[in-house]
Image (cartoon, rainbow, N blue to C red; front, side, top):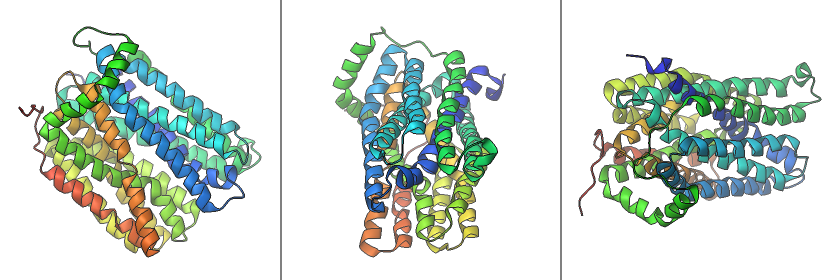
Length: 424
């Protein structure tokens, strides 16, 4: 029996995570928020810049959240998941590359191109996640899902480390300064994303679609009409519905910690260079940890593995309330890195086992929609608590609510191979 790590289609599939994770690290979590404020929004109050960035993030997330079930329905009915992934990847690559050519003060163009990158990144992931069922046998779902995430953390971390070095030592690369280094970093992400997408486009083969294939237009039209039907379909599966609510809560906490950690460190007065180094450390810790948690999920079950990760996030959130030094922030980065990839990969494989046959694209579209909607409650909670209390520590501690609620609901989901519809 061939190991899944030696199969060409499995490795090619995992390389896409290696490819697009560069956007998540260098652009989304690393350079774009700082560059948007200091270069593209110069001369305005920081709160104005923050509101502009928040609006761009919100609109992009809302677009993907609305599109997700429709895109999933298209994939299920046209066997076009790979074509759709390539198309949305190109859309994101173009937006990311354009960031390297936008001049100082042109915040509106920067926001528009950033939104393109976010939409391409998130929409492409819908089809990437659904292709998991085409490259892995049921018994290997945990390991292959973890393999993808680990490759993502390694690939994204490698390019991010190069990009950080470019900004710290621009003269080593023949660049005039840090600003030009950041612009070239955006271009490097676009090239990296495109090049490492090619193995998936060439080597991954989709399974045949059940029933007659239809045109893209017909699938899109039917997908729009069937959105309410998709919600009713998901509601018929009690285990899936309960899991999706739990996932929506705890993954919102995960996303919020990832996107707000650097801002929280800055609010505590920690140097930005140390915070970026801690973010980089998280990537490399997450690489082996995702693999180990995938193997652990095979032994103890994906559900228990997710609950373990949630417990670690709870402890890290409480620890974050008390930290006040760079070494403590680095310790927190290591703890988060240990479970960051695992909680995502095990959630994906656990959901994959619940999905009924023939509904991978549609249900993974809904799964991704819940993930996208699970990216605003945490920041809103942090902002509200900070506004009411004026205390950044209390705001980060408020995320405990999301992890507790998500963990309790997940505890109630039975760990089964495939969900059966509830008769009505």
